[in-house]
Length: 247
View (cartoon, rainbow, N blue to C red):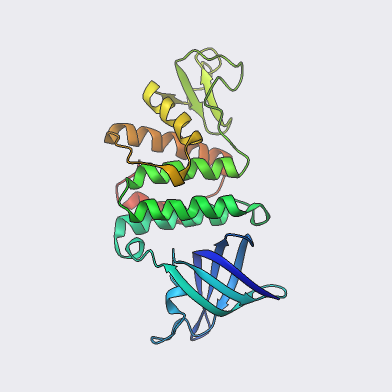
């Protein structure tokens, strides 16, 4: 069967001497694996379509298992995401988040649109830490683990101060959090941002300017939620941590 999709490459694997297998998040066919023959050859006409973070049109034949690329057109190479070390680290983590953090059968058009917007925001020079944090929040929500940050997850209290539990999946008031020393305190500013990141659409993000201190707090809080709810050890996180950009 012939498929025609718009897709974004989130994973690549060398196959044989000259080929590559790419994993695509697509606009209409979920997540698919496609064999790109000859992609490792220097003069391959399809080499650009098998690069990480590439956004293109892919026409492939698939019956069961892997598809096989027949023809493709580049829409956006996202070259900068592969050449700037900071952007590469964040884009790699984002790609792994959606690849491993969301069940294959659950991926649909909304996931494709948010990923496309996320990479576009990074390429446009918007704050990498902010964009990554928003995407982490979107992955949690799209995975069915939408954090409760509007009220205490245990008693429904709306009055702070609050602390956050990654394993409970939300905030707890001072009464409900008194027995757990492992919870992270949440400042008023960070709480407003957590609520904003739940509501905001990555296709409509402007420039959000935050202090390093606030970015570090929000990053730590959202990461606690990601670890507590998804329970996945992301390989790209150590690469990201070694750059010293995130807590």
